[in-house]
Length: 93
Ligand code: HEC
Image (cartoon, rainbow, N blue to C red; front, side, top):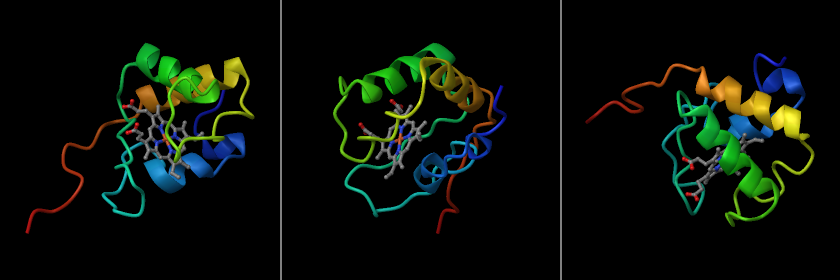
């Protein structure tokens, strides 16, 4: 059982989504990276499989899930579903 995506030897998720799935606000990508922290496990698992099998087409997410087995995808979804969601991601002016 992985306790973080980093331990799974993959750094790519945290680069965009943050280590705990609370993404920084950035205009680096065409689409705003989404919050994963505390999202529903089944929902996350379904979306990850959609990206893996290119049923959901997002260029930022293309090829990020290909190397993960079904079991690893379940674990990634579980990991992010258990992370506390930050209520405010940036300090208002
Ligand atoms: C290059 C940046 C980037 C990387 C690396 C990346 N993502 Fe994403 N991810 C995005 C963006 C941007 C979106 C929003 C896509 C959209 O709006 O359709 C997204 C969407 C998602 C979603 C859908 C969330 C929702 O609310 O529907 C999940 C789940 C997800 N990413 C998980 C991951 C995981 C797990 C990894 C690592 C294996 C990863 N991402 C790596 C940029 C990235």
